[in-house]
Image (cartoon, rainbow, N blue to C red):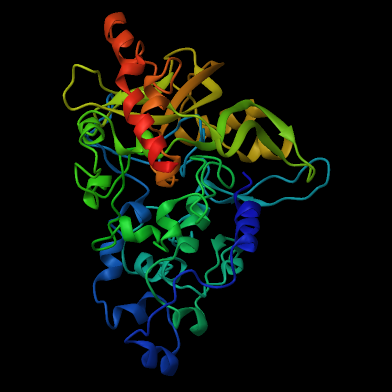
Length: 456
């Protein structure tokens, strides 16, 4: 995919000034005297950390999953082995590799879904033992002076594909908690390009947390390198720790009692994240040739703040079928709340014999545009012998959990309660009688009029 080129572009666009200044580190003198020797240097003060990190999702790219239907509870799932139509591949079939030369130009390049894995690829996703511990790229997350241009694939003396690392003393002396730059180099580019997958930008102009100079790990506070995650229906693997708005905000965060009543059945995100962006459709059965003569799947996308969410009941368990991945929940389910989602639709090949989604090795179509060759290669890697590829669509609901708008940009009474408002009450399970009451001006008129008078 475009991941390597896009990461380079993203880095070039980021500020040269570190967003979070590294505080003086207690090991600074030791590093200046001895240089930086990778995790072995970190272990002088943080013994056992490298071994513990090998058990996290950031290293394994998978975990046991207990909130998604139709999964084996004894198996681990994640980027390592999942296949769905945002990516249509995984670390197994799209491990870091050199693609075949383009028939047009004769040029080749490296590709791989696990380009962002914090190792050296020689010690890969899920690897364990002393060599794996020594391969961890601690500074890619913790240094505000990391030279990301050094994190590029190359072939070693034995001809093996590896990922470079910046292990310079300069980078090691700039150790601190991860800045947005450290996180977003990978998370911005997930899904094949900057802002493609979830379509949010973490900038002062687009998120109130960024405007307050907060950083990702202020909310995603790690414990033993286990990063808390939210409940995006598409985000399966997790470290066993979760995050929600109520971790920092109370269940009744508003001064107005009427507004506070809404929090019982409406998620904070519904009112406070009114827009998103990113890809809304992608076709893996048809790849387009780009200016560099390599091919990429046809993708339809919008910029940040261009996409209006779809709202649905969600009880934090996930429906998982070949044609659909999304929220489970109903109005009658007291565990459910109304949440906002970005709908993505992906076209790929399914196996006519069992209805399952087929994975794709991106190397063949990237070089030639031959998508069926990519399916055949992936089937060979996975040991799938009997399959009949047929094109089909899968719908995915991506949770809107970032890009929190300023208070004056949040949804207010009339956004939902006026006719043709943001919420489709009929689809959410309300009766005609209830809808008539919910969309009557009596519901919101006086409150909005009073607010307008205050602004005068």
